[in-house]
Image 1 (cartoon, rainbow, N blue to C red):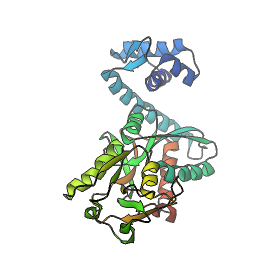
Image 2 (tube, helix red, strand yellow):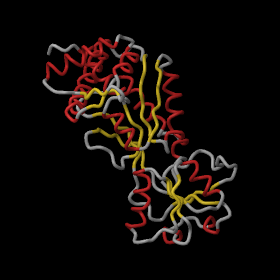
Image 3 (spheres, rainbow, N blue to C red):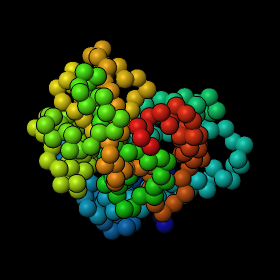
Length: 308
């Protein structure tokens, strides 16, 4: 192969940033070096990786997406190989990019990253939050190294390690008569407005629970953030089904919610760590994995789930 590993990295960087100038800035090199790497790659492998648009930067072709996926796996394997040869005592430094599902990230990621930084103070962790689809696309194109997310809707070309089951629970105001019940059924909710977190996999999962058990939800109110759902529930505007319970039941509004187990808790999603298949992960990614495993063995982690 004539194209160097360094040039492969430049091409991947161009795909990640969607522009020549963005990749050059990220790699701290000239734009001509990025252009030369792209030209060398496309000539050697006989494919067009990018469509170059003056006003919109770079658009990756279908063949380019496939090529970048293979290239990222090769670079992952090369990095892991290099780290292994340096020995297990090498300090973990540089950067790690983690993708995290937005509704679970605040309750988990800060503590995991804190413990990781204590063990490896030279390591900088960048957290990229988003919905399940967007963070998976970031893992696929190499913008993040590992995902912390639910297993619902996970791409088949990823390797996933389950960490814990996250059964659904009911979130409602303390003044709601249903709060007196120890366990709440879907049928108890039919006369209540349903506060639905309007993220693709989240809303699909909640609605599928009602459909699976042949129950019709009450009027649906779609809300765009996890905390807005909780605040609306605390104000008595409806009830919600969520899978994670933050450490405090006090919402941004200053009002409290009550959380009760849902009788119909199957199927329950799992929180997983996902990585790209086909290659070994870096020691930095492996350290994050181990920190997550340690966190989920703690009482603080177990308290995040109702009725588990």
